[in-house]
Length: 275
Image (cartoon, rainbow, N blue to C red; front, top):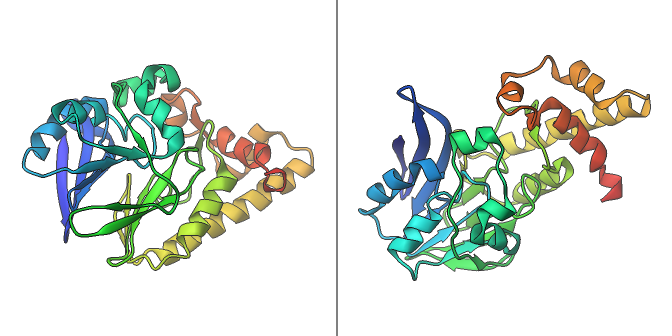
């Protein structure tokens, strides 16, 4: 299932596998200035290829290597073998062999599917990628994944944030995410004069700096509380119940891969003082 929204020169492409007539677990790609930013999941790759026949694509940029952001890389590159796919250096091995480098839990295979291999090109922090008329700056923003990056267009104030910022007050986190790095990455983008924030899921934000600041404040205050309880001898599960409420439905669906417990553990295992 595909839905489109237009934000001036930016086309937001919403993608989801259709289950019982409804899209489930939407992910987002963007087309702007001849560039495709992320490519959705494997289950929606045919629909995306059909849609993109009407648009010129001179390059793909992957914000990170999770399966719901690289799913149409391979079919697009087979269609055009010279199509470059830019990504963080640590993402390149995942793109080349997703099945070996990024095994998926059952829920991830079901909702998004396993991507096929594609050929990526490493892009450096601060490097610029040109579209038809605009230059886009690469900004390394680890935390959600170690190979995460954002793409910033300074003249228009566009930030394509991948999964670094999706809004709200998170009560759960995926296994392996690094919360202190997420906070540092949010602080990094908060220094930019952003007019439009285009996330990899959730809604587009206009003038988002106040929301980004609020998210940083929420994360830091939550971290202080978690560390305080930990120093008093509380276990991670007890802290999660105390501060984050009862068990969430997403914990059942993901069999604990995305959970309140993982959020607490990330604060404890990645204590900023030890980084």
